[in-house]
Amino acid sequence: MKKIIVAKNIGFCFGVKRAVETTEELLYKLKSLSTVGDVVHNPLVMEKLKLKGLKVYNSIEEVKGKFFLIRSHGLPKNQIEKLKKLNFKIYDMTCPFVKKIHYLVEDLSNKCYTILIVGNKNHPEVLGIKGYGRNIKIIENKQDILKHKHKKLDRVAVISQTTLNFDYYYDIVKNIIEMVKAKEMLVLNTICKVTEEREKESIEITKKVDTVLVLGGKESSNTKKLFKICKKECKYCFLVENFSDLSKINFNNFNEVGIISGTSTPNFFIKEVIEYLKKIGYKEVS
Ligand code: SF4
Image 1 (spheres, protein in one colour):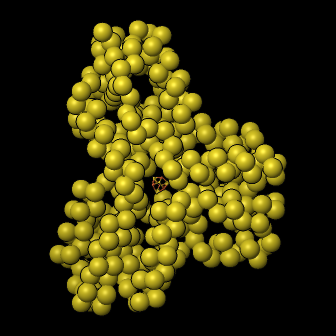
Image 2 (tube, rainbow, N blue to C red):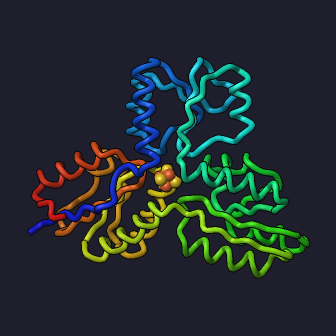
Image 3 (cartoon, rainbow, N blue to C red):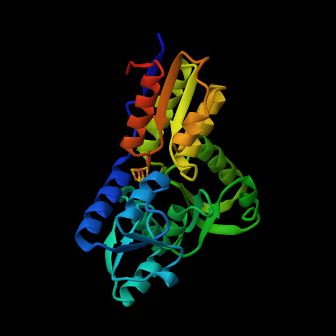
């Protein structure tokens, strides 16, 4: 029998659900709402929000209107101040887990720590976190650590982007400890547990099936991370952002299909994919 195994931890995470549902409610009430960058990294969700009146700008300098929404990734503090001075009414949908890191960075910065954020230099969450303290450096890879090798630092704190893979973070931290000379070094695990659970479940599912569909946006960090993890375990692993991606896959040789998703993948898309598979002969098992 051809089966589908669907992950238990699937669809929007808590932070994304909160941001998307509030955006929809606000659009219904206010009719127009502005933001900078995608509220979530998923084109299907963004298309729907834009149709409902969401205006997405590239930078704070370009923003127009009266109402502004801070996306789940957060925004640097100085940009929020700027918007307040321009009399925008601000709705803050920064995920509470990310907000917690903002408070942490402010506190560490006040205590004169040099803060190393391990993460993607261009990711909005990392840029947002950077905006809550002084003396902050972003470490994307081992090469970036070398820049701090010969500096004599007093107090150093290391934190991570929420969607980072733990093994990757651990490896970078080991290198930081070896290379950076500091009188005191504080290492904090700020990886979001939701993404860690998805990683674990994805590996379990990947071992049971012939092919894995990782549903989610191609710009979504956690979707890309899940795809990378599954690809290591399973040769036939596909990142599916939309129906066109799905229709290109030849399912003839696959008996068991695993379905997992990033944290910004909407339920309606997951259901559509399952329906499609059922139509071509699969049965949903779990
Ligand atoms: S992945 Fe975690 S930190 Fe990111 S929005 Fe979801 S709950 Fe918040």
